[in-house]
Amino acid sequence: MSSEAPPARSGFFSRLRDGLRKTRDSLVGKIEAVLSGTAVDETKLDELEEALLASDLGPAAARAVMESARGAFYRQRVATVEGMRALLAERIAELLVVPAVPPRLPTAPPLVMLFVGTNGSGKTTTIAKLAKRSRDAGETVLLAAGDTFRAAAIEQLQVWGKRIGADVIAHQAGADPSAVVFDACKAAVARQADRLLVDTAGRLHTKSNLMEELKKIHRVIARAVPGAPHETLLVLDATTGLNAVVQAREFHRAVALSGIIVTKLDGTAKGGAVVGIARDLQIPVRYVGVGEAPEDLQPFDPQEFAAALFS
Ligand SMILES: Nc1nc2c(ncn2[C@@H]2O[C@H](COP(=O)(O)OP(=O)(O)O)[C@@H](O)[C@H]2O)c(=O)[nH]1
Ligand SMILES: [Mg+2]
View (tube, rainbow, N blue to C red):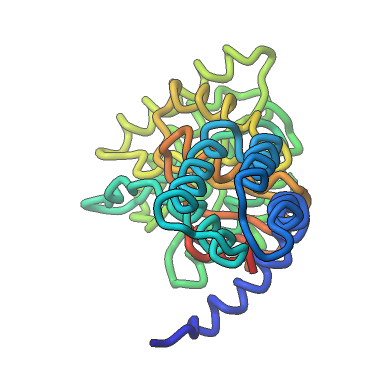
């Protein structure tokens, strides 16, 4: 039996652990406060239920965790604090596991990834981090400046593109986003780029316009590149907590998400919401962000996440 993680992962594990510090203090702190002493009894279980319901796990995930805790206490006679703590960590890890949709891979380049999410959720910086990863792996990467709502958004992507070594397809501010994305798709096909990452706006004049615009962009991609988009990823800011679930539903209805990226876990005590999001939406969390550096964005691993929370 080996408990050693590969070096690269263990480096991230400590970043993840540090990033989840506020959540650990809040969520796990509450659990620990209830489960102090040595023995578990019915009063403690009731207090635990209250603590979980008041946490950012959300009611459904909290109830699922409690069901396991009560079952363990009454049926399997888990009556020690250590036993109960281990069980909670395990159960939370289980709730984070969402059956992954088999990845859609292109039969010919490019692989197209569409990024959606509200303003400031972290789309552009996440695209930059993922593009850097692909560049480091030797891929050719193209970026589409689909957030034409603000001139600054286009410039931000261009600055990143230059830094990373990825060409950016952009039109002027105020241009039709679908037209930019169409051009980017054509360019990516013509150049046989390995990957095309599509940035989008997080706010238009009205919200319903945004969803219509995203649907249009989705259709344009599907028509320009057979089988695309291969990934449609919602970028969620962890500090929005469980409100993220409502947001995610709306985006999912518009563009059928294949995965979720949760950013800014480092700045919030609401990281427990990731559990609620996975449980409620049954859309896999693909990456988590715990800081602004490129290595702060990493593939999501449920076991690792739960371990980082409880360690
Ligand atoms: N602390 C922290 N900041 C982040 C993270 N991800 C993104 N940000 C910051 O969030 C801000 C908004 O990001 P941006 O990519 O411009 O959001 P967009 O409007 O969705 O494109 C930027 O200042 C990013 O550096 C993260 O995981 N942790
Ligand atoms: Mg942006």
